[in-house]
Length: 192
Image (cartoon, rainbow, N blue to C red; front, side):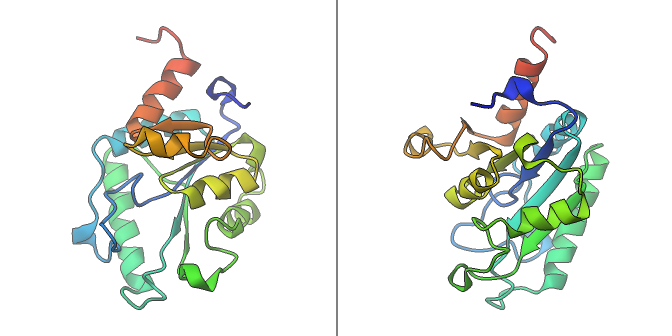
């Protein structure tokens, strides 16, 4: 199994958005800036992860667009706000890929399908999927990562859920910050 100890500056980090970076609204979508709330510690975690990985990308299903609950312009404003807040914390995302299609449309871009990763690879040809980590809070994120032979990191407060899918999940953490702390500890033992 790939371990966290193998990760170096050749690696790429793929992050899901809702539930990993920001609070996921229950049975809803983040439709405007007012509804976008960072999960505690995320900007600081991304800042540290930027120093470990070559690239940091967001890959996010946003079916609310095709459900006409929001527009691509709304999404661009949300991502603009998110990016500004990250920059204020000396953190960055190199690029954001999104899928506007609903689950029932089963579009190639929608996770668990690999379309957004292939978009990233086309734009950044030096990405190696076998040297990539997918961090997400749903099984579609984990399936997306596994289809591309990525290392998968599941974010969930519920450890039982992670144990149900051992083939899909390489590591499980409660938060992105917890993943970042463990990664730093495994790469730089005794760093404190």
